[in-house]
Length: 199
Image 1 (cartoon, helix red, strand yellow):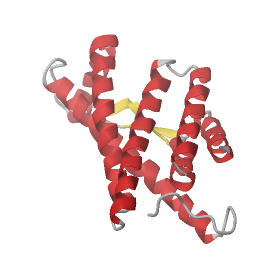
Image 2: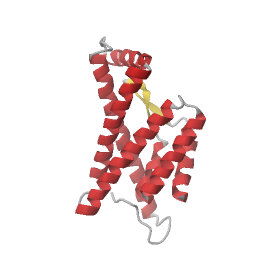
Image 3: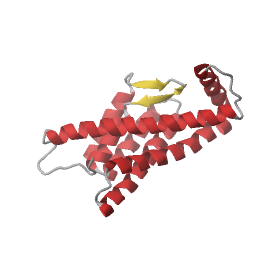
């Protein structure tokens, strides 16, 4: 429990800092380094710590008012869907032994892509169509061609959203594993401790 709240507090603090950077084709999609402590809680201490950390981080984002509540809800859905995929992969690790974090991370990315593609469709087509116009305009400028918002433009926006979510999963998991390996090498946080899932 303490690990979950501690990493969530770190994530909340990082969210206040300029530690995110845009995905160039669609700038409102941002790579957020504040996800890393939340993933660290999951990979290092298990599902309970991970989901607790993600939930506390979500509540902190709600209070910060960054496109609240849609923005925080989308972030929470992205993180939790990735967690669920990783947890499903971890069950395969336990069952077959040879399947490790690579598969768990792949399942996490696949579920995140599926969930976030659906949710982004709802947000940009149903709730906030002006977002679709903005995304298509920026993507058109990036590609150097004019895209139709209702056909090719929409499909390419959703395709780039999927690419972004795949890259974000790789970034969050890779950085978390790097930190986790450093912690293990240093012998912390205590004797006999080992990560919840091996890399």
